[in-house]
Image 1 (cartoon, one colour):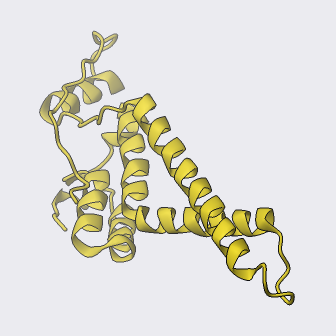
Image 2 (spheres, rainbow, N blue to C red):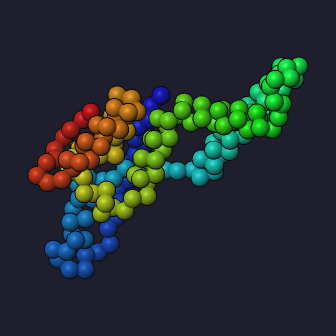
Image 3 (cartoon, helix red, strand yellow):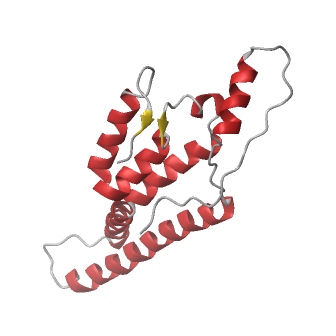
Amino acid sequence: MKLFHRKKKQTLTVPQLREPGSQDDLVRYVTEHRPLFRPQFDGWKIARNILFSLFGAAVCGVFYGYVFFLICRERPDVPLDPVRWGVIFAAIALFCILFWARKRLCAFVIHIYQAKAPDHVRLRCVYTPSCSEYMLLSIQKYGLVRGIWRGWKRLKRCHNPNGGEDWP
């Protein structure tokens, strides 16, 4: 599974300078020499995936709750409440779905940051690849926990006089 997709670089345009030597001058220079990658999002696709996951968890809960009801209805010592057991099994199914998709959820949050963070925040990174790209690459290479830990350590040292090229 590839978490890091680089479709194409988009060079951002900066409006005309109001005064020479201003912050706009710096933003223009950095934007021309280091364009930002902004992932594209399809809101309907995201909503559809979330709804399908919730629907799948609900169907699993109803199915396993009914199966549990059929198996245990002959035992008088087990309380029979199919709605309660359905909710319990739906919660377990939802937890399993989230547990299996945890890398993708983390990558999704990082992609939201890459798409929505303002330029002046994202252009502060002094490393190549940027810290968000490094986090995605390290999660892909080392796994979720160790990748997030390495990305967090990288974020803590992302300031001057550090910088340069640093790959996971």
